[in-house]
Image (tube, rainbow, N blue to C red; front, top):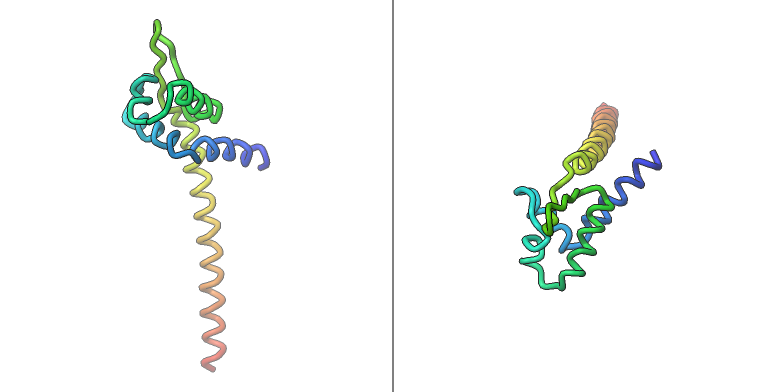
Length: 113
């Protein structure tokens, strides 16, 4: 469980920055070069590269270099980990709400007698 949380922590850390989240959003449409990812951002290229490094270390993106052009794309399996974690949380919340609902119904029935 702890290693799963650490994995999620690195993913959420990587997504916590607005610029990195924008890059992920752009990459959801397909691979892009560093230049294409840097275009909408108002920051120097070294800063863009630092953000991309955080995304890569979080396992959210992978890169490939062809000649002088480095291209990034999403690593869908990492984002699937978030989906799985959210589904587990939702199931736990639903079980809690079901127990609360049952308790409230039983309590209501006892009070109406």
